[in-house]
Image (tube, rainbow, N blue to C red; front, side, top):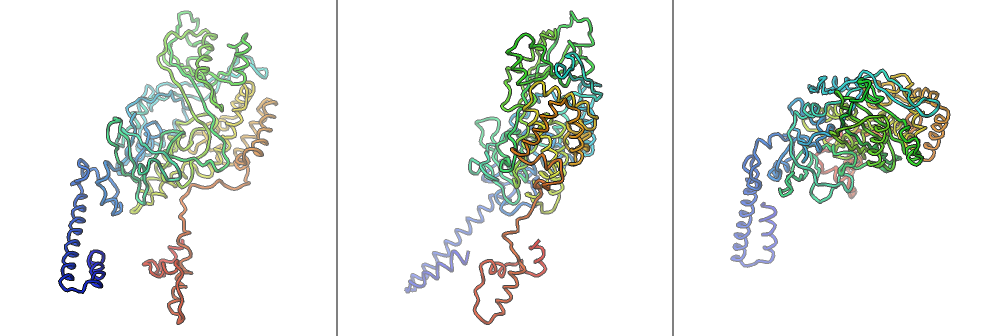
Amino acid sequence: LDTFFFRGTLRNQSKTINNYYEYCTAAIWNCAMAIMKLFTIVFLAGCTIPGQSFLTPGISSSTRQHFSTSATTSSRVYASKYDDQCDVLVLGSGPAGCAIASLLGAKGDLDVVVASQNFEADWVPNYGVWKDEWGTVLERYRSFGVELDGGKYGESIDREWSTTDCYFGGSFGIPTEERLRLDRPYCRVDRFALKKSLTKNFRVVEANHISDAIGLNMYSPAGSLLHDEDGTTIQLQPKDAKSDLLTMRTKIVIDTTGHETKLVLKDTREPYTRPGFQIAYGALVEVDESKSSDLSQIGPYDKEAMTLFDYRTDHFDGDEGATIKATKAPTFMYAMPLEGNKIFFEETSLVARPAMSFQECKDRCFRRLKHLGIDATKIEEEEYCYIPMGGALPARDQRILGFGGAAAMVHPSTGYHLCRAMMGATDAAAAIRDELAKEKPNIDKAVASAYDSLWSPGNIRQRNFATFGGEFLMKQNIVGLRGFFDGFFRLPLELWGGFLAGWPGLAYNESHETWTKRMLFGLNFIIKLPPPVALDMFLSIVSYSIFENLSLIQSVTPFLGEPDSYEYKRNTDRIGDVSAKLEAVEMIKSSKAFAEMPTEVAAVAGSSDNKPEKIEVLNS
C-alpha cells in the first residue's frame, strides 16, 4: 500500500507542487485514499471467512472442509464462489460411473460426487456376462470392500445357464438345425441389484454439465469449466431447468457420459478407424405354451441354455428380396430364457457402418419368432441398444478422465462392455487414490496415471488386434459370419475366451496379452476357418495394413515398437538447462567487462531456486 498508493503518488506530485500548503493537502488526500483501499480489502477478505460467506449464503463450513487442505490461497479466498466442493466429481450415473465412484469412495477418505439429472432412472439394458468373467470382477471388488450382492442367484445375478448355444447352420455344409453347444456358463445380471450395490460411498447431485470441449482443456461456454493447478471449477445445470447454475469445485472430473461425450476429445490425428455400431432391438415377452409338446424348450431354444448366436436365415425362405437383404446386412437372435414362459429375445446387428435400422431389427425379430412357432402374447419390456464400437482413443494430456464409453472401452469386435468397465474401474480408481493420498498431489499426473492404467501400451496393442477383428466382421455377409464364428468357437476355450475378454484381469485374457500369444491365436484360428473365409481374412490383413494403418502388425509382431504412453511426463522445456544458466550467472558476475545477461539467465539469477542443491531436481 505504501509503495503503490502513497509514496509513488506523492513523489510524482512533489515534482510539480511548490506550495507547501498544496503539498500537505495532497499528502493528506493520499493517506485518506490508502486507508479507504485498505478498509475495502479487509472487508472483502471478511466475506470469505469459512461458514460466513456474504456473497453466496448457504454454503456451510462443513461443505468446505471436504475439499483438499492443499488448495491454493486463491481457492480458499474465493471459496464463496462455489456452491459445492468435492475431491472427485463423476459425470454420469450408469454402471461405469457408479462403479468407479463406489470404488473411489470405498474407504471414506475421499468425498466423491456423482452428478446426473437422471440418477433415479433405472438401468435399462439386459446385461449378459460369462460366469467366470463375472467371478473375476466380484473378487476384485471385494478387495476394495465393495460387495456386489442381491439377485435371485446372489452376486447381482438373476439367472444362470450352465451352457451356451449357437446356431451357424445354412452355409459350408452345416445343417440348418445343427446346434453348437459351448460348455461355458452364462449369466444375466440383475440390473436393479447391481445398481443398488454400486450406489454407495458417494453423494449425488441431480445436475448435468453444460460444457463442450472446443480444444484440449478448453471449453465452451466461456467460464463453464476451468482447470487450474489444484483442480477444476465446473458449472452444472440442476434438474429443474429454472434453477440457477450450480458451481462445483473438485480436484478431478471423471466423464462417464458415453462414447459420444462432449468433454473428452478423441485422438483422431493418429491412425485410427471410425467407430462401427451395434444395433439391437430386444423384447422381454411371455409366450403361449398351450400348444407346446416340450415345455423344456421355447421353440428350438433350450430353457436351460442361453442362446448367444442364431445366425440362421431360413425364416426368409421364399422371399428373395428379404433373403438378399438379410444376407448382405446380417442380424442374429440372442435369447435368454427366464422363468416359466418368459424369455428375452434380441435381434442384433453385431457391428456395421452405417448402423442398421432399429425397425429392421424389430421386424426381423418377430418374423423369426413367427417362423419358429413362438407366439409372443405379451411384451413386458422393449430395449433399443445403440453401441458405438472402436473409434479413436482419448487424446493424451487431458485433465478430464474419460471412462467407460467415453474412453472407448467397449470391445471393438463384440460390443461387450460391462465387465471391461467394471474391471478397469478398479485400476483407474487405484491410480487416482494413490496420487490424491500425497501431501501435494499432482492432478495432471493423477489423471494421466488413470488413463495409463486403462490404456497402457500393451492394452492398446491388444485393442488394435480386436479393432481389426471388428473391421473384418463389418465386411462379412451372412455366409462369412457363419464360417467365422463356427471356426472361432471350435478353438480351445482359453483362446476364444481370451479374445472375447480383451481386458487385463478378466478370465482367459492372459491368452491374448502378448504379441506372441495373439500371433498363436491367429495361426490357430485361420486353420479352423472355411477356406473362402480364411482367404478373405488373409487378404484383409494385407489390405488393412497397406491402406489403413500398421496397428495390426504392431499388435502381433515385435516390430514398430510400443504405442505412445499416457504416462505423465513433465514438460521441462521452459526450465532449460539450469546448470548452464547458473554457470553463466557466476561468470558474468565475476567478469570485469560489461556483460548483459540473456533474459533466461537473468531469470535464474534472480530466482530463489538457483541454489546448487536444487539444480539436479530442476533438471530432472
